[in-house]
Image (tube, rainbow, N blue to C red; front, side, top):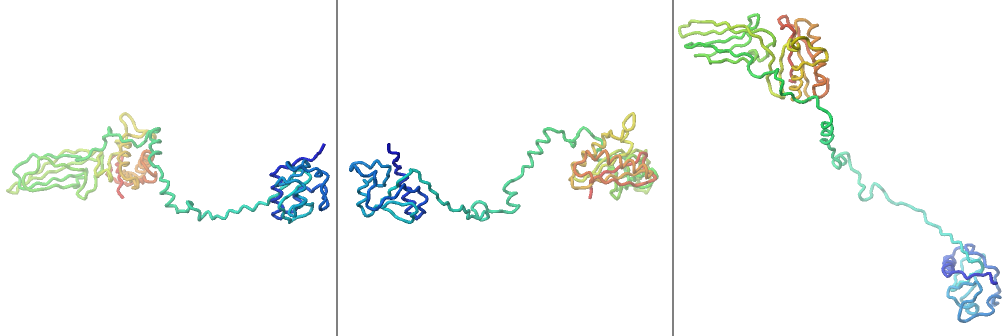
Length: 350
C-alpha cells in the first residue's frame, strides 16, 4: 500500500510563496530523495493523462509527471536550496509545512497631548464643564435633620418702637421742654418746642447722642411749660423701668435686655438651660450677614459678675448662631450705677 498522501493545494501554494519570497528552503520539509535530471521516479512510471499521478506528489497546475519532465520551466525543490523561483512547484515527502512569518514591531506613533478630542484645559475649563450642585445636598440634609436656626415668631421679648410714652395735658403755652433723666437726676434725652406740646411724646430709649440706655435701670422725666407772660410750671413724672427692646434693621440689629430677664419664673436658669430671650436674640442675629462679628457687651457693678454673665451668654449662643463660633466676641464694662443683675447689649455692627 502506498504510504504517500496528496498534499492539499493550499499548502502547495503557501510553499510556492515561501520559495518565491526568498525564504530559506529549510522551512519546508526535505524531499525523500532527489532524482537525477531526466529520470522519472518509480512512482511516476505509469502516468495517466486524464488525472494526477497517485504518487503523493502535489503540483500547482495538476500536470502529469511527464509534463514536468519535458517542460524546461518545471524543476524539483531540493533540500537546502533557497532563493529559487519556480513556475510549477513539486513537493515530495511529508505533507506538513512549517511557516514562520516575522511580524513587524507594533509602534504607536501617536502623541496623546495632540490627539483629537484630548485637548488639555485649565482649572476653569474643568469647573465649567462639571458644575457642582449646591442645592441638592442642602435639601437632603434639611429633609432629615431639623435646623437649629428655625425662626421663632412666637417669641416677643424685644419690642420695637418707644420704651416710654409721655402725654402732657397742657394748653396755652409759649414753649415747652421735656427732659428724660436717670436715677441720678442726670439728663439723658431732651425734647422741646414752641406752642402747645403734642398730645404724646415717644421716647425710643436712646440718649441725645444716639446711645441706648441701660435696660433694667429706672428713669423718669421732667416737663417744663412757659406761658406768654414767662411763667414756668414743672411736672415731674413717676419713675419707670426700661425693659428689653431693640432698634435698627434686620441686617444691623441692636438688642438690649437686663440680666434679671434671664431668670425664669420660680427659679434661676441652669447652665445648660437656654432662656427664651437668648434663643430669640440668636434668631434675630442669624438674620444679619454671617460674616459680621456678634458683639456681646455686659455692663455690671463688678468685674466678676460681668465676666460670669458674658461667658454664660457666649456658651448659650454658640450652638444657635450661624457661622464660625469665633464670631461671638464678649466684652465687659464695670459701672457703679448698673442695674441689678447687669445689662446686656448684643449688636452685629462692624
